[in-house]
Image 1 (cartoon, helix red, strand yellow):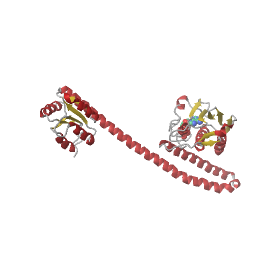
Image 2 (cartoon, rainbow, N blue to C red):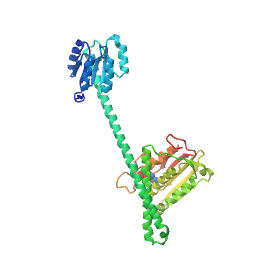
Image 3 (cartoon, rainbow, N blue to C red):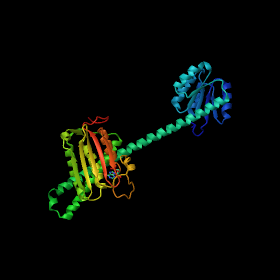
Image 4 (tube, rainbow, N blue to C red):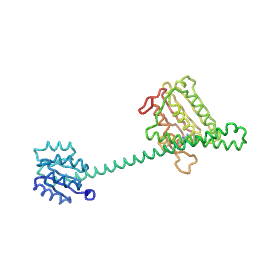
Length: 386
Ligand code: ADP
C-alpha cells in the first residue's frame, strides 16, 4: 500500500551512504516536526519508495550502486510531485546542476548547518504543496472542460433534434395553407399567423443556439461568396414582415445607390442571421407604432450597415456589455421581452470572422443604432472554410 504523504505532509526521505549524515540530519529535521525515514543506499531507497510516498527527498549524489542521479530519475517517474534535493560535496556541484536539469528542486552542500537544512526542507514542502495544488487545479480544469464539451455537444444535439420536427411542421403547415389560406375566415387566418410567427420564432431561436454552440466549440465557419446585399436585406425584412405588422412598426430602408452591393463578398447565410438578430431585437424593444430602419452605406473598402430603432435606448454602461454572451440589460425573469442573451455575441463573432466590427451607439429615450462594418472582401481568418 502506498502511504500518502498528504495525510502525513511532513514526510522526508533522506538517502546517504554516510550514516553519520543520516543520524545528524534525522535529529535536525525531527526537531522541526518532520517525519524522517532514512536509507543508506539507493537500492534501499527504491524498496521504501515502492510503497511509500514522500513530500521531500534528500539524496546524496555519489553513492555506490544506484547513484543519487538514478534515484532522482526513478522518483521523477514514480512520484513526480516529490520535491527532490541533491546532497553534494563541493566537488560534485556540477553533478548537482545536471540533476536540477533532470528535475531536482535544489541542492545542498555537505556539511550544512541545522538552520540551512531545515529552511530548505520547509521551502521544499511549500514547493510540494504548490505542485499538488497546481495538479489539482489542472485536473479540475480538465474535468470542467470535459463537462463543457459534453454540454456543448448536448445543446448541439438537442437543437438539431428540435430543428428536424420543426421544419416538418412548418412545411406541412405551408402545404395545408397553400390553397386554403385565402378562403379562411379572419379569426382562422389570425390563428394560422400565430402558428407561422411562432414557428419562425422557434426557428430563429434554434439557429441562434446552434450557431452559439458552433462558436463555443470552434466549428462555426464562414463560407464567403459574392452576394447582393440590398437583395439580402429586402429578403430578410420581407421574412420579418409579420413581426413588423403585428407591432405596427414602420420599416425604413435607405441605401446610397452604388453597384457595390452586387460585388460584396460574405457568407450570405451568416450575414442574414446577423440581420435577423439585429432586426429581431429592434422590433422586440421598440414600442408599438415605432420605427425601425436599415441604412446601408458604401465606405470605400468597407460597407456599413446600421440597424436603428426608436426604442428605449441603452445606457453607456450597458452598451459596453451587451455584446458579451448572456448579457441582458434586464436579466430578471419578470422582464417583458424574452430572449437568451446570446444574439449579439453571435453578431459580433460572425462580423469579426469576416474581418469587420460591430458596435452600438445609443442614448436612453432616443433609440439605438447598431452598426456593422464589413470589408468588401472578407479577410481570410484561421479556421475559415475557403
Ligand atoms: P436577447 O435579445 O436574446 O436578450 P441579445 O444578445 O440579442 O440577447 O441582446 C442582449 C441585450 O441587449 C438585450 O437583452 C437587451 O437588453 C439589449 N438590446 C439589444 N438590442 C437592443 C435594442 N435594439 N434596444 C434596446 N436594447 C437592446
